[in-house]
Image (tube, rainbow, N blue to C red; front, side, top):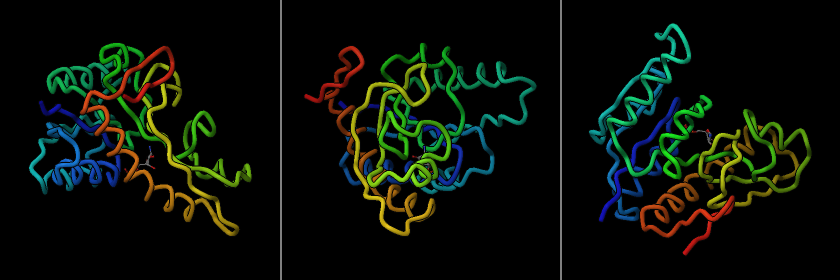
Length: 201
Ligand code: GRF
């Protein structure tokens, strides 16, 4: 049976696009039931509209406090009732309350090989550190920052002369393969969380 997924995105939404393309091509046995965004200007909204995916905008700036924003977000997520929530460039830390409401049902993509270079500007961190290999990681979301059980990783070489932008672009290309691949595994019920590891069946 097809899974129901929902995507949370804050910006351009190229990973969201890669996921919906893979669904449309029949590569992921799922339907995308919603795009939820905290940013009314996110380009991801245009992408959703093009393929008639319902959009819920929960404009962070319009809430008097973070708690009230989180409450509205939680309620929108409960309403969608997805099998999987896909964070695709969702630029806020997901609160512990939301993580606990959807255990094992939320994934994220990070533009570095975790556990290295967590948080913002991972590609810049990689360039500044001088690593020779970086990449991207898809992981389940837990209460730690970018620290949940790892599902898949792709390696990307850091080339002589790379800067943050050129590395980010090369990593992004891999993200667009890695994320649909990981979501496909989830939707085929092939992922099992064992302790802090993910077993792929
Ligand atoms: C990606 O690099 C992703 O790894 C990070 O945010 C960026 C989102 O890009 N979490 P896009 O909005 O999917 O194009």
